[in-house]
Image (spheres, helix red, strand yellow):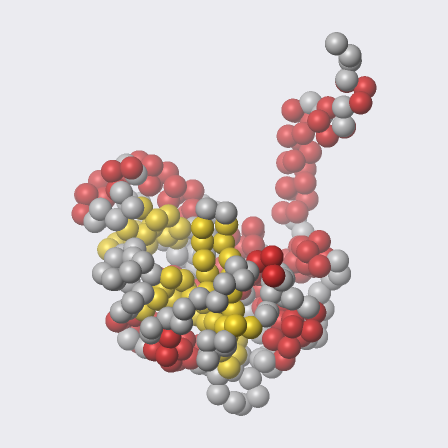
Length: 306
């Protein structure tokens, strides 16, 4: 058998110890980058150029600037515990999923009191979620292990979104969005722009998750398809207009009031609308718009950079 060692790529030939050391070195180097430098490098890697964070014009640039120069209200409304209170005051508690428990450690008594199905999530990071369809598959020790990992995670360090830093990490156990609905709920994201003193201008993103990944289709308020992002991220299918779209539009406009831009996420079923999140930096400023002109056009829809 021929000796292939001489033609083995260098990356494959590295001893495990050397690879581990290099990985730790890169992690340490990234960890010590300033937020602005980290975001600038990530943006250049994604789009081939640095963002203008001093005088942002495009939507992605404005979102990137928000990550390092946030509005003072972003922290409270991004805290998923405090956001529930805000939603109740602003548009009504009927939009909130039932909350079973808020805690830092799940004890056995609390665990047994939880329903058979629930959503577990962290208060300080939008990606820290677990849909539990069958509680018997998730013993209390396993949920606590995952929960403590979430609570110990500094999401600002990984996402460089400064307003995450002051959020009190907690675990939230809520009603799954499918419960109490005639049909499974679908996630819709409402991009709400309040610029130039005019009423809100809203675009809707319909999220479809499947075995091959997720697709994101965009519509205007008349439910006409619009081309916003690169076609590789869309399904190419015109979805049916949600029955409760008008109610969701009104609720999204109310929740986003007072901000140049905010994205309001809902689960919408046949007869109910349930709040999911408020996002001030969606996609972390790395949305793949169809063209740079689309990026700039959305950037013009809200005047403030923060």
